[in-house]
Amino acid sequence: MACKRLLLVIGVVAVAGAVASGAPPPQPARIQADVVVTGFVPCNNGTSMRTGSAPGFPGALVELQCTGDGAASALAANATTDGKGWFRMAVNTTVAPSSVASSCSLVVETPLVACDATLPAAGTLRSGLRRLVSIVFFPRGFSYVATSADDSPAA
Image 1 (tube, rainbow, N blue to C red):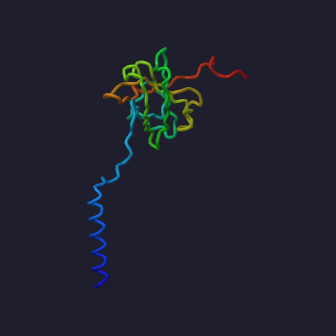
Image 2 (tube, rainbow, N blue to C red):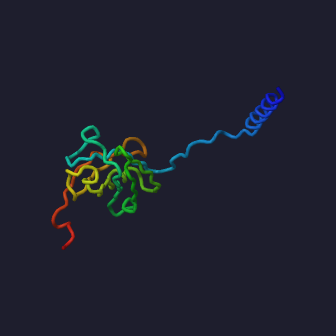
Image 3 (cartoon, rainbow, N blue to C red):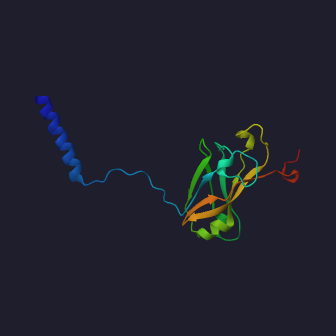
């Protein structure tokens, strides 16, 4: 009986201490970013590939590459797809979101044979960006770009 009372007293003191401290419960980490790019990379070498047309490409390195003379050219980021082919990257920048949409693209140089041995060993997947809302961008649709003979290293 004494043990039950002692446990009750300890429980009441612990609850009272937590309430009295006024400390909010811990929150999950928030993404603090100016630009978020998220999407799906298909394991396919078709053109303008969409999410439902192919399985995901797990473990692919997705690079945000920007061109131009302005600040957007200095913007770069990368992310690795999860086991289902989805990725998410958050970038802090001073570049206007409209510049990101017009100056940047996504490039996957991870060989397609990494996700399907019957696919080409050379070439890249590329996609432009489309703006969903405010600072969130998605791929327009990845397309396979074969490596030309001029791009291959000399023997």
